[in-house]
Length: 586
Ligand SMILES: [Zn+2]
Image 1 (cartoon, rainbow, N blue to C red):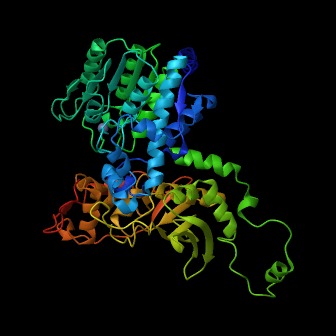
Image 2 (image 1 turned 45 degrees about the horizontal axis):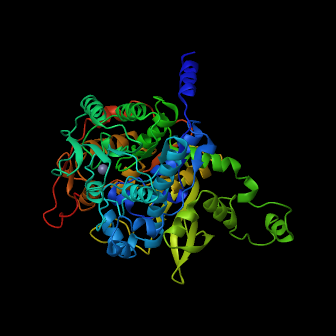
Image 3 (image 1 turned 90 degrees about the vertical axis):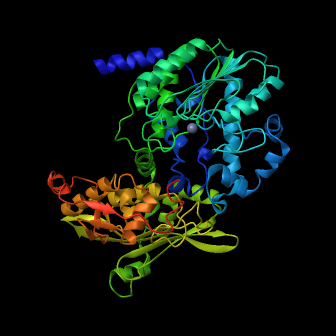
């Protein structure tokens, strides 16, 4: 009954909203997640959730156009705009290595986001319905300089364009990102009838023309919401508003220090939405550098579209949900052989001719694997990284069967994905056993900004969550109960730790003790220290144990409670590197 009432209440609150989104909002920079800590799939996850949960109907979604250079030039200097054709300049704005920047594709993403902010503002002015753009709020972009993940400034460009089109009303910008709006202040210095209000968790000195409050580290929900109420009371009533609903206000963010909970961030959005009722408004995500930052953005959508306080279930995994829906539409006949047996196949079946290696795990054809990679959107992602002409091939080099995905770049065929698989029983469960998994981006190079992890030959592709989810779906389609692999290094086990557990409970407890004792050490330093023998277990040098880890698709055969008992018995210590440790803790 309560659930029904909540739903009724949110239906009564439902307002029309437009959501601006394009799958190309995912920045095609393979090291963004691993080295910068940014979730490149944030807009995708929020869009999928808003659509699936019913918070926003499909008809509310809009696709933006890339903003024109004519409009960008209203704010930015010709020198800056010209320099954005150079990988080094764009790479420096995102703090990644230039080899990892397919510059036209990255600028397509940025220009689409700018187009979404402008189109959202125009439509909101016309209809008085709020707009949510799932990428944008590039508030560090200055007239002559890119910086802080902001090559250009979408809000300033939208304002300059609307002014040129004759809009003369007062504009308010509420910058609720955890960092100060330095680029906005620079772009809008002296602009008539623009008010900028901001709450930050970092003090970068005074910003002319900004009503800014800087809160102390870890301020938390209460003080933040009090400060916001006071800021809203000072805000002059605008004819158009931009809200930068930053995701980096969350506790655990890598760069933001305000320490809000997800509920606190939702309260923030509800408070602002109530204050701006009937004011044309564009909502923007701005920053966000934690695993949960997409939840803040999806929460903004739920607050704006439905006035909803409902939590997104903590166990909801957007990739798993999305891929499972795609997998349901993939008919088995698209993945495996179909039709009548040929004469050759009958002869093979009867043992009259040697079998060809043709079906992966007795099920998938090479074409079926290619089709799956296409349907799960992996080839689109690889194309944006600069590869074309994909093909899958199988062989059986020794233990297990090998799948390789190859793609061309610059007239050369490169190995991009390599997986060696086998069906094997583990702890009494039929499992998909992964002997080897390698995701390779040979166009990118290692550098100080893209450090080599132990065991890496070339930088990764940034698609391990997608490929991991595909392997789990593959195991499920084959009727298996687990996916199992041996993490050759600490960072591999670390990346898998949310879904996978060591099969041996003692091993799992040693791993959890290691996570506990190295909690403050950056991942790259931790995995390097273990590989170099600088980590000690109970005083003795610790050698990494590459034991089996399993993702149990049904129930785990490991007894609950076994891990907790052992965890407190071991303790790890770590010696800092004598040399070469610089540049790691960024
Ligand atoms: Zn920020």
